[in-house]
Length: 156
Image 1: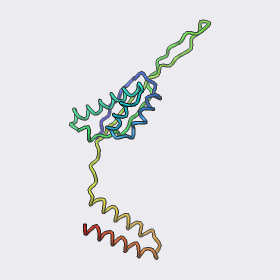
Image 2: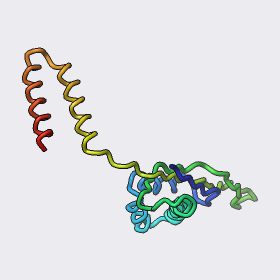
Image 3: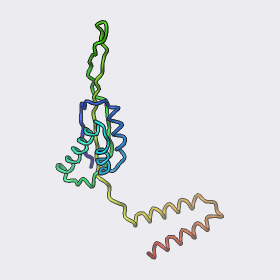
Image 4: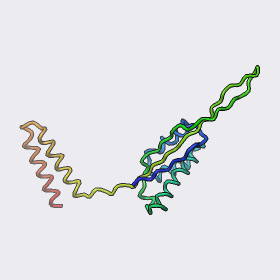
């Protein structure tokens, strides 16, 4: 199951928020929160709040433990810009764009681990496909080694 939270109209430029979001995007959830505590940027506060909101939604609304959650994606999109002017000489004004951004955090439940028996079946299938690609002279030795490997696994 996925849990999505969006923080809209954050008064920071999307470029600055993306710098922090890209550093924590591929980390496990616990490590990402620890990393946000160490990074000294204004955008870490907003990212931390949105991640904590997603965790709270998953926990309170669906009863999912925080240990079973992982970051699927973090998107930082452009929001509306406030147009302001700075007074300069000769009665003129230079335009200033005060940028905003929308931050979307998606968390998902971690998948259950694959059983060891299923892994063994996958490996034997891989050996069979490799055997079919080898030349005929090497095929006999590959079959013997594969049979020995399967016999050793059967003994265990």
